[in-house]
Image (tube, rainbow, N blue to C red; front, side):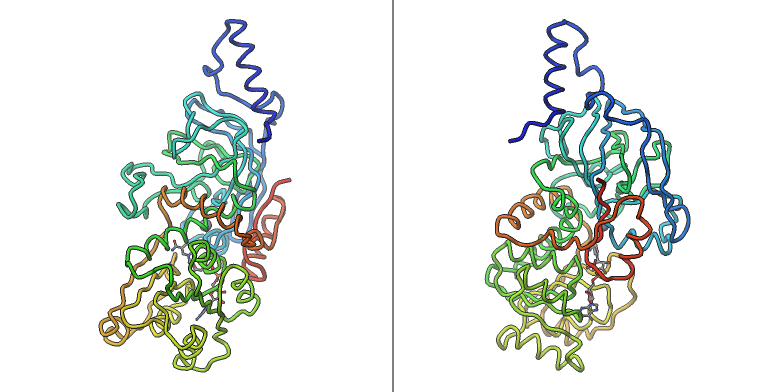
Length: 405
Ligand SMILES: NC(=O)c1ccc[n+]([C@@H]2O[C@H](COP(=O)([O-])OP(=O)(O)OC[C@H]3O[C@@H](n4cnc5c(N)ncnc54)[C@H](O)[C@@H]3O)[C@@H](O)[C@H]2O)c1
Ligand SMILES: [Zn+2]
């Protein structure tokens, strides 16, 4: 294991303090090497629709329960794109960026462990999860105990006194008083850490799927939609050992990538006229059989209606494509649900426990050589944040990320 210079400095200080019988080092925030933390840092603030200003703010005070993180990178999410375009959550002015990661440069004396109980300190790499401000019950690690619908995240908070509460920045202040949750992910590389948040969405969806008792080792699984969400779904199924996965999309490049991540068959819906023909295409890809289980990973209501046709009688469906309202879908309750006895689950974000499972998934994916890093197709420096969001809207790549030098 490489020894971090910050760790060395912390140890030296501790030894010196004990030799001098001086103030215990834990009485003050533990900080990185003196002079490493500048007086100010940049924050990308969405100040109006389709416009970020990169502002310079003083580095805030780090309280006893707080953590100051030097940001290394942050993925651009569909939610950021919605905020950029329409501000549906009325947050402007807002410091966006919630798929971020970085290195702890200063930490309050009360913060010694992460949300999973793992020791944490200066020099460790970190990600944040939800902010469970007024409902501590949701922080329980019990799957499905409670839906996290009401929780906040860093990067979607109203502007406040700290000014540093989004990950599209040089520094972010993680505050204990807000009910922050965070994890020490020092053993994961930067690309893996940038992908943690979207991967947790899929870990949760797969956990929801498993509650149907239909998704099995030898299941035939169809994944509809091969954006980052569907592609990560395929990678997770692959690491679980599921060997019969058919990907459906209209984009050949994305379907090719689906194969690299574990899809055994692909169906380009643009090549089929009508749902009957498309269903035959999916069946053919499974060697003449319908799917046992389906994951719906598009935000298109027609795609929701279509997917029932791809599933066998008694099969299962996980619908996770509608993080935001995409409109109504028309299904036939007799043909699609009742007479087929489909077991349907919805999936919405993740729990704390899913985060810990996600770290294990990312390690497994790497160990079997899945090219997950290739999901990050475009990297921009912070000052090009507007360009990064425009690239996301243009849909020319997959995952767009801001990466600090
Ligand atoms: N459940 C959650 O908590 C959660 C979290 C994040 C995102 N999401 C949702 O997941 C969805 C996918 O996210 P993404 O980032 O991958 O989006 P994306 O737009 O990059 O990908 C969607 C893919 O679906 C394909 N597609 C569109 N219509 C189709 C159809 N009829 N049949 C097959 N494929 C079709 C598109 O070609 C595209 O490749 C979004 O709608 C988002 O709201 C849900
Ligand atoms: Zn996100």
